[in-house]
Image (cartoon, rainbow, N blue to C red; front, side, top):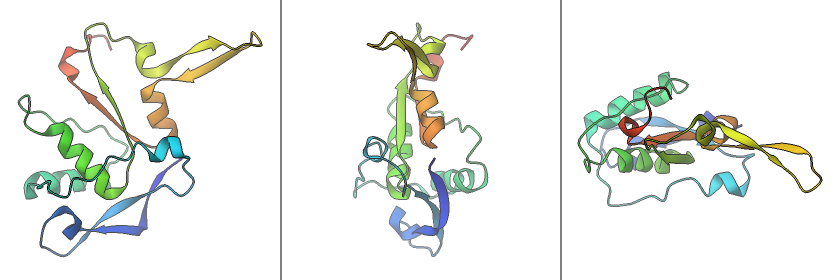
Length: 148
């Protein structure tokens, strides 16, 4: 499982701000390549808004096990903000776009029958993110069924 660590602090200047400080980084020392490829690519031209970054940093360090809901108009940069934050702290991201026919098994996973006729559970995106300590990002949550 991946964890946040103090020995890999990321300077606030990494976020394009000029004040001193740091943000906890993400430890991925034991992660395999399938997890590491999910760290978003850093866009060096991305500009963080100080207030948004402050809120995200507080959540990231104080309540990382709690969900964070970010809302705003379509195209306002919610997804790119999360991806660019995660790119800078080295956190892998699993993304899913909600839809009206989204089912719990689409999130959690399901059993399959292997060639030797045994049953094996295959993680869904939510389970995979939880198992490896990754950020789970749901886009268009308002499109998901109410009972999800």
